[in-house]
Image (tube, rainbow, N blue to C red; front, side):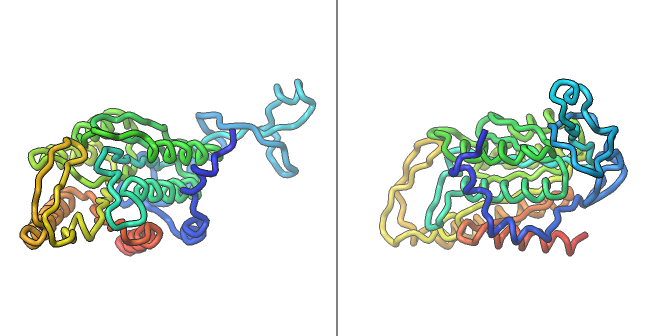
Length: 310
């Protein structure tokens, strides 16, 4: 089945070119014998069949599917999904607040989808298995990790569908969703959470507990905190009374932005710093991304920074 042109928008050729020399390495021990960028020690000794491809001179005869040859009189090679030491998941927040665009070109959800596509491309380029989960109040979409060549197509189609999904009235329950993620992921993995962290204030501690639970289970965790900086971090709205509506609860409140701007910016900065420090204490990588900054630039900057930390 062909990938639709709409889904292909996430396979940005410029980003693919720029990511060509990049790597995403694990910083901590994951399942297997090695840390970081790797190739499986079980090459040719895999557990999951992926697909057939035509035989080419030089291929090992032991990988020829003789049953297919008997039926077609043609040589085909069995390709398997290699047992890699690293599995990777993108866990994407798709709640109503993630559809906010503000002054940016992309909504937070679209921005997160482009980030996810770049990460999936990177992992498949490294021949590592990559998967996708999406949540709002619960985990509603799961695409298990695979390193098979045709897996990219399914991931792109899923990301496209998620950005078009009707999220009206859906709230964020990241803590509950991440606890479910921890239950679903058995093998230790690299887990990248993309979210705006728009939770009720009382739920922030629960969210940190859920992230710590992922670490406690041996997963390496990266949190990409995605916001539209001008309005969501600095409260840069016109200086006149405005009605603000919570897209997740529907509640409305009339405020004058100039009267709240300084206090809001301080509170937002305090929250992010508190969250960053709490993550740091438990070896959880936390990065704040502004949707007004190119996702290519943001991802490359993060990967370069991460490589320097290794």
